[in-house]
Amino acid sequence: MQVYKLCLKIIKKNIPVMLIYIFIYLSVSIVVTLSSSRQNNTGNDFTDTKANIAFISGEETPLIEGLRKELGRQANFINLPDKKEAQQDALFFREVVYILRIPEGFTQKFMAGEEVHLEKNSVPDSAKAAYIDLAVDQYLNTARFFLSTMGDVTQESLVKYLDDVLSQEADVKLMPAPAKTDVYGLVFSYNYMAYSLSSILVLGMAAIMAAFNNRDLRNRVSCSPVRETAANLQIFLASLTFAGVAWLTQIAFCFFFDIENVLTMNTVYLLLNSLVFTVCGTAMGFLIGSVVKGNEAISAVTNVVVLGSCFICGVFVPAQLLGETTLRIASFTPTYWFVKANNQAAQLTQFDLSSVRLVLSDTAVIVCFALAFFALSLVIRKVRRFS
Image (cartoon, helix red, strand yellow):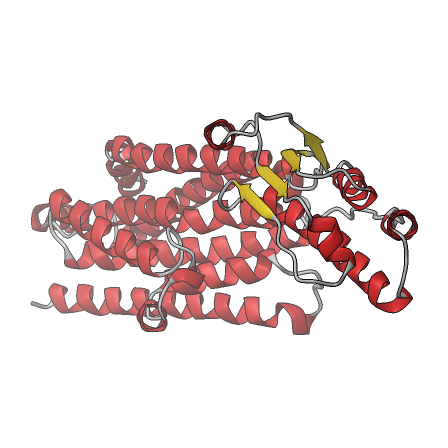
């Protein structure tokens, strides 16, 4: 097993470079996991809060008091001086988010059906201010409706009708929202594997193949008592060992960061897809090692191929944000189909054949890429052997 041991020594020599990709993967996964956990803890919470407002009225009438009482259900009243500068300061420092001023003579004109206007100042783009606007509009529009349908009615009666109608409440039960961040966290670790796992596999396999493409080493193996078939078998076993350890290491990290979903059926298809992608990454490294010479060139080609495909295939940037032309180009890489299959597998709720067909078809495309890479590598090696 001398050839097998030699392959492991070559891989061992490149471990420091591979650890860089594992460290990057762990760092990004930790950040995403913490972010997802924080969103899960706050996503379904709702607390009704009151806005701080100032209510300034130029008259005291039953209608105005009724409006004040209605707003009191949604707001806390803050006393402010009736000075423009003081009110502007209160808005600027967020002491209040809304200032409502009712001019003198408002009630008389309103009861007579005339057009009236209120004065208001609010914090720009404030959701709380928008709710106060809705409350004021609801109160006055309902009052105008009663006036138009009931004819002559006193302010006291109108306020009583308004209080009876607007005080009615409906029971609202907040249903927990679907855990979107769970799906995101589940699929992210596997999608990001396209970068870390591909880089590790390509670097390791390319280093092995580049070493055996060296004429001196190839001649030494040919002169040794080890047959060519046995040597190729040992290279295959070393490649299988390396790919298996790399895959298991990545999967262990995925399980660690998403332990809640380890035993789901979604994870089964994600594991299958990642295993097939591991074979494809090994084949890609086999091809690059057959073409490129030198460790520096291998590192450069690896960064270009792996990083480039990750950027256009939805690993670093969600596929929804990428253009149609970009995705069409990305479809000529196995990373695109890997990410697509992962996204579909993570969203599965039923696992019959019709539901998983799309996932399996995308995985089959990755198998085709792997076979193409292996076939092309064998052709290149055969041409070089006879050249």
